[in-house]
Every structure is written in C-alpha cells, then in structure tokens.
Image (cartoon, rainbow, N blue to C red; front, side, top):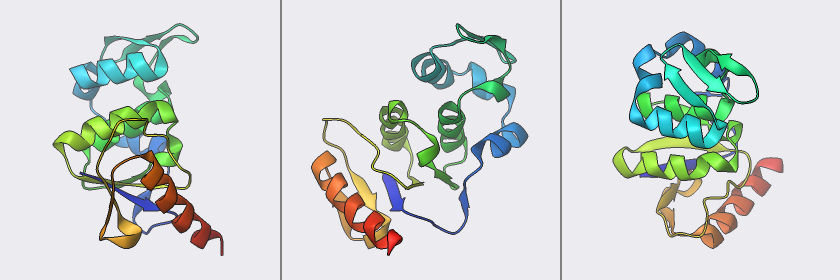
Amino acid sequence: MLRVWFGDRRNTIYNTSVFFKNRYVDDWITDEFARKVIEDVDHSKVIDANVIYSPVLGNIPPEKLSGGVKALLLMKHYPGKIFNASNCGDNCAKWILKLAEDKNFTINLFHIMDFGDQDFNIRILNNKKLIVHNMREFLDAGVKYLKEEEA
C-alpha cells in the first residue's frame, strides 16, 4: 500500500538526484519496469545500461534521466526509504500506484499529486487511521494537512 505524508518529514530523501547517482546499479536501467517508465515519463528509449536515447538530448547516461524517473526507480529499489514525490510530475502518479500494488512504501508530498480517476487505496500518515480511495478524498486530506503545514 502507498503511504503518503503531507509536508516535511524527518528521514525523507529530498535530493533524489544525488541519492540516485550514488546508489543505482546498471541492472535497474535495463529491467522491464525501468524501460517502461523511461519511455512513458521521459519519452526516451533504453539502449543499454549506460545509454538512454532522448529525442531532445540525444544519447544520455542514466544520471541525466528526469528527477521523476530517478525517484520512481529509487522507490522501487529502496521501498524502506521515504522519497519526496514532489520531485515527480503527475505523469509519475500512475507508476507510484503501480509500485504500491506490490510493495508498501512511503512518499512525502508538498502538493496534491493527481492520481487520476480510478479508485485506489492510500494511507495518509498524518492521520494513520485515514485511508483514501479516490481523488476527492485525497484532495480533502491534502488540503487539510498542507494547510496545517503553512500555519
């Protein structure tokens, strides 16, 4: 299940680029999940573990992938860590939900991520008893807890 904490949280990894650069391994880039995410989010194609073809940038190393792709790969391979998913665009939301089908993990958000029109189950950790099932409930929870953070 996906667990979300709205606002700042201790032990969150905010700089996913630095964490990714120092932790990823070549096998991550060539697995099926990574290939699909890189194609969908970055509109790029994995050539091999060290080369991704970007229609905008040409051939790039994995370190030049978008922050969203890096965060998704880290979430997959480090489910025990908390990552700041506000580094991701809404185009990463479906992939976050996909990861949560197989693993329990936590993200933090400083904005309302658009998880789409389908039903889902997300536990809001600001109130551990609260599980939201759709965007309306998620929005209500996010507004409440993000507003409290500003106060």
